[in-house]
Image (cartoon, rainbow, N blue to C red; front, side, top):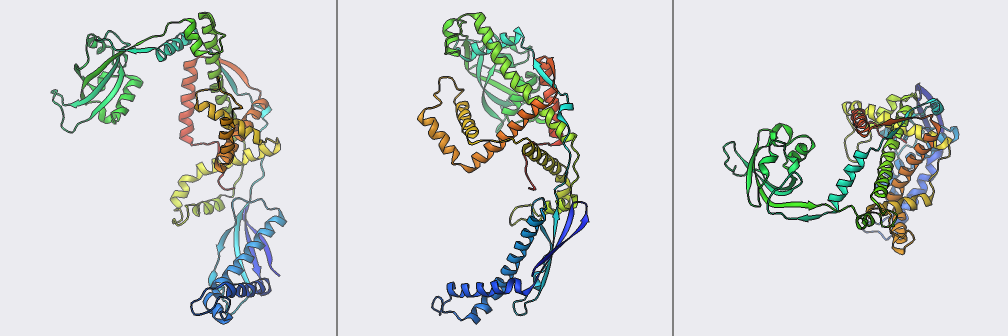
Length: 472
């Protein structure tokens, strides 16, 4: 009878020693030989009439090895179940030593595997935590900005004869020249669309009166500033280091001007079709509401980010480090060489963070019975579809084509799996939000954006991540 014994070689890191005897595998091996001889297709013999001796000679060794390893696998699996050993990934063979297996001299065999145990750990008490719940103050200036954006976005493009001010849109071709103004053969030539206001203040007045087919020369590094400068450099396929000292001729191919929408009932009805916005005051209030909602979603994400860090930073978990490093080495894709020690060391800190987060979420989901139902996934697919189509306004949720789309998505296993993971993470944070003693704090839009950028910068530096499930 087969036996399995365990031995601790380091905290949470064990060896399993599996011994199997001849009687464990020989009957099954003989049966496999018989079955194989019935199915074997060997030239010169009728199917099912191949002599057993020939089958044994040709295929005996590989069938023998298969049967022994099958029994070993089964014994290890049964032992893990019986002992209730909660392990990472799967047992790793320490030394399979397949050369000991010999069909001509069956014997008792011993194999050793190593396993990494999942640790027990305590979660922080979220009720003792008081992260900030930010409220972005929506100012009149923000509403004015949004009104101007909407008036331009829905306005009509006209084609005046010449440039009159900062609001003109120019279709242009950037043509690379040298410092003396000669076109560079094989240089950059790129069409683009720019606002006059993209150029630096010293250039703008010189553009007034310019018409289609006229051109002007610029030194690229001093023609633009800020985010416009970065966007133009990117459009031209240049980085900061190579862009600054280049010169370009800018050929105007079209002068445009957006005729902004009038603030009237017709425009309000175009933006809010259900007819409850009639006056400019109602329009401003509606925009305040919409902008508040958008910032609420942003500040909620920020709160979730804070909770993520509380859970990650205040939970202490010990890991079977050596086992996990050995396991990582084997995870380089089929047919690929094993990872090097250097690769493993470089990836390990990020890997452990991801693993830690997946253990924390696993425990929270189980303890608090956080479940995703099929209806949740259907609703998620529906909202995503409406999102693609620019919002839910005037779309019938129960229309046949909507139901057909959702039914199709529900049959896509990968889609359902991804949606399930996203919704589970979302529900987890919604639950955690109700547990913390969050402190409300009013903040300006610019302060909030600066803070978020700082967090993102730190986030990338540490390469943390929410949704990982590696060594499970």
